[in-house]
Image 1 (cartoon, rainbow, N blue to C red):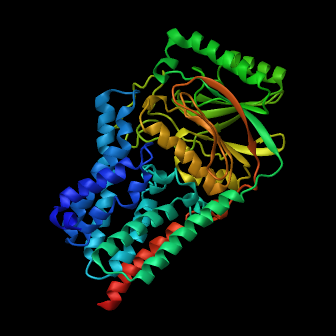
Image 2 (tube, helix red, strand yellow):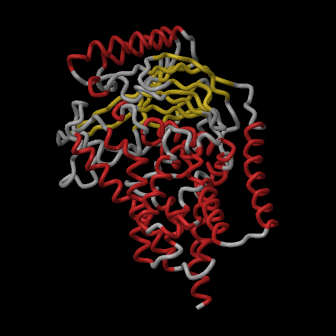
Image 3 (cartoon, rainbow, N blue to C red):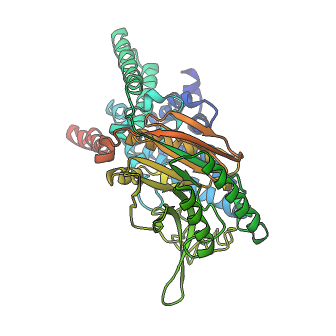
Length: 498
């Protein structure tokens, strides 16, 4: 405690930001999230609203730079462009922590602020997920992927119950440091913690699959996305993907999954290459789900691009799904007249004119329905939920994290897939162009994981569970309740006392 009392607010904000930031990385340091906020909270409970805003904002800057540095690792654009993207994202995301500090500063004259704080952070995390700039990579649930029992109640409350859990423990520990707590109270809290963890562990143990299962072959080609669309490499890329397709057929799966934008061509338009794929599907009797870019031209000659996936079945017409949630400033520009930073990304297309789809497509495999998520969509819970509510019994994720190299970005992206599996109690298969590919059970356990920068064709089975959950059906009810609780504990009770 002496250290907390002697350090200045900006020093404590930097310490907290560092601890929390590193807890997101694949370094097995997720436990730091349970104590990392304590220095920040100490400043918030002792300062006025204005100072709290700036210490919260400084914390957000440090924390977001450390946890999201991979934004500047994008090799698909000039370094100054992606560095500017990181700076803009950090400055924007840090505002939420500044607001949190401001609010706590306004209500820190009574003990209600301790009780209010966990619900406030959940509320801000929830609000941060809205709109075209919605960003869930900062959700605290990502720090706990090594502690699966803690995540098993996400099928009721989504990732926000983990945030409430982490912030509550930080608040309790800080409160213990500042106040004398009876032994009885301490024992009660320890029992509650152990009960929560034990309950999650039991839910893993008793999550039993049904008897039906499918064998899925996954292709991870490990092709540098900066080279895939280079005309000089085009024939070599097509030949490689054809050989990997043959290898997958030899495994005799029920379906083959390719990654996002698997081939350097527009499959719907390129009849020759699509026919070759269709013939191979017909001969093998094994359908494929393959990522592709699509292009449409309107009556005025304006070209519009879609990030899509194509489902090719034996002796049937192909089906398409168009990515609904695009990546702002990468696949489309929020303000085209001012921003067009990735216009020269090596895809032989103008990235700024990508358009999002609207149809939540559900495919059929031997009378079992499934859906596909494309890359960034898998980080946003609402899309997986929508597909499950539309009847999907398992999910496929196609990604291309090759732009991010060996940074923490691909690792965090894979963990999002595990969260979606737990939230909806659905098995998930993931194919990444350069990794990470794998099979994930409905409890979030990783059955198969193929690392980054590895070329591999592999097969595993997915067990069909009773898909869906309370969260699938009702969504972020828990987060909304936390928001109402924050309003009641903070503004409402304060007004009543006044």
